[in-house]
Each structure stands twice: as C-alpha cells, then as structure tokens.
Length: 94
Image (tube, rainbow, N blue to C red; front, side, top):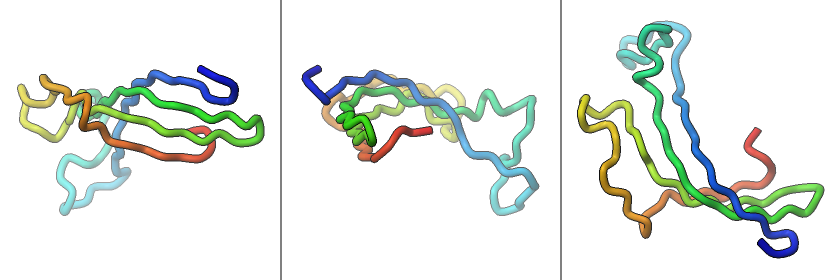
C-alpha cells in the first residue's frame, strides 16, 4: 500500500476438537465422519506494518459460517461491513 504498510485479504477456517470424550462438551470429540460439518469460516481484510524483524497486524473479520447453529442457519446471509470482529496481533499467525 505504502512503504512498510501492506494490505491483506484472508479466509480463515477451522475449529477446536477434543481428543477424549467429555460429557460436558457433547459432540466436541474429533471424528473423521463429522469434522467437515463442524468447521467455522470467516473472511476479512487487514493491514500489515512490516518492519522486517516483526509484523504488526490489524484485521477486520466477518463470520461466514457458524457450525453450532441449527442446520439451515449456519451460513451468514447478511454481513454488516460496519460491524467486524477486530483483531490486533504482533508477528505472523503461524
């Protein structure tokens, strides 16, 4: 964008699963036959200040899919551009 300031577009998908059954968290255990239906998806845009030794990030994210909602309601149908989740981070995400 300008100098050390870079732009970014992203899509993020994933979830957190248990390795052992926990009665207080039903359907939380990872299973090959159900995990695809349990993936959450978000997308957004952001800015990166790249100082060659560290990167500062400011991201604006929008939920696209919420897996814990009832079937038929999991995909977002109305994204409010003025109401993102704001994430601030230092360093790369991985």
